[in-house]
Amino acid sequence: MIPVPSLIISRDNSSSDVTTLTYVDPTKEVNAGLWCLFGGASVFLGLRIWVKFTRLHGLWYDDYVLVASWLVLLVNNILICWEYANGYVSQTGEWDKRMHIVINITSCGTLIGQAWSKTAFGVTLLRISNKWQSYVLGFCIATMNIFMILKCILQWAKVCDSGGDYQASYRLNFCIYKNFRNGVKEGGQVYNVIMDFVFALFPWLIAWKLNMRRNEKIALSATLSLGAICKNGLEERIEQPRCLVLLE
Image (cartoon, rainbow, N blue to C red):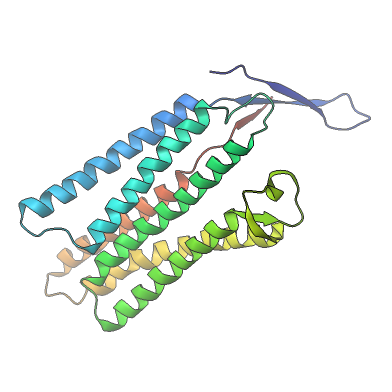
C-alpha cells in the first residue's frame, strides 16, 4: 500500500478549525471484490452454458450476449487492476494522460457491461412474449443501448467550460457543456433503474397467462423478477471506486 497522504483544509479564514482529509488506498479491497464477483458470475454463466449443451438445447442469442458481457467484464477488471497498480491512488491526486485514457475505457466498459447484461435478459423474455410484449421489449432494449452509446461518446468528448484533461488531444473533436454532460449521465442512470423495474414486471405479464397452477405462476414470476432486480442492482453498484475520503 502506498503512503497515505493527508490534506489539511481550513474551514474559515478567520477560524482555527480545520478539516483533515485522509485518502486511503483501497487497492486490495477493490481487487478482492472485483475478482470474487467475477468468479461468482463465471460459475453461474458456466453452469448455464453446461446445462444448455448437456441437454442438447445449444446456445441462443441471449447466451451469446451474456458471454460478450462476461468478456467485457473480464477486460474491464484487468484494466481496473492495472489502474490501481500504476498510480490510480496517488499522493498528489493527479493522473497522467495514459491514466485518464484507461479510466475512460473502463468507464465505457462498465456502461457496456450493464447494458448488454440487461439486453440478455430482455432477449430471454422475447422468447416467451407475445407480439405487443415483444414490441415493448424491443423498444426498451433499443433505447437502453442507444443511451449507452450516447454516454460512451460523451465520455470521450471535450468539455467546453472545463480545462485540463477535458481539453486533451485524445478526446473527440467537439465539446459539450458540463451541465449537459452530467444531465445525460444522470438521465441514463434513471432510465436504467426504470428498465430494471420494467424487466422485473414483465415475467408477471408473461407467466400469468401460462397453463400453470397459480402458486407455480407466482413462484416463477417472483424468481425471475427478484433475479432481474438483484442482478441489475448489483451491476449498477459495482462501479470503480475512487479514493476513499475519511473526515477526521
